[in-house]
Image (cartoon, rainbow, N blue to C red; front, side, top):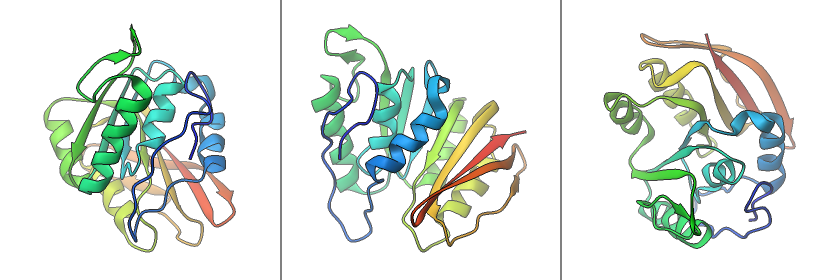
Amino acid sequence: MRLTGGELSGRILETPKGPRIRPTQDQVRAALFNILGAGVAGTRVLDLFAGSGAMGIEALSRGAAHATFVDQSPFCVRTIRTNLKNLMGSDPSGSQWGQTPLARFSVIRSDAAAAIRKLAGEGLRFDWVILDPPYGGDLARKALNALGGYAIVSAAGWVVVEHDKRDSLPSEIEGEASRFVSQRIEPYGDTALTFYRRQ
């Protein structure tokens, strides 16, 4: 796996090993960030089901101000920390990218719903939330419902879900605190990206 754009373009990422781990293909990640374009610069990004951390690190490479990585697997969390240390020149509690203070980042070992609840309790808000759960379950729906229960996505913020294109996601999420409406679906082979906008 390689980063596809920004300051760290071309750098190699370590990938965690496991039967349910399915790293996002480079071409899908590149397509996503080509859609986001300059809209990622200066934003706060939440990378749920982070795996190797590729999505959040790609966002940092392309100018995001902060990325929070969430995964419940100890193997994935270890890999995320290793990638941040190797690529950013700092451990995950630091603020240095080489010698220049740029993006800050944090890593949380937790399931998605508990992390959303924790981050909301801390008053944090995110401009982009990226979900890449294992295929073949209802983890994406559960995470979307959890996001709807808290005002964790900034006003007019976005949620992007990577999923099997055969799995249809709801066109609208109506929660106690937030409402999200599907704006576009982009297929890439067997994978699809569904974009939700907070209303």
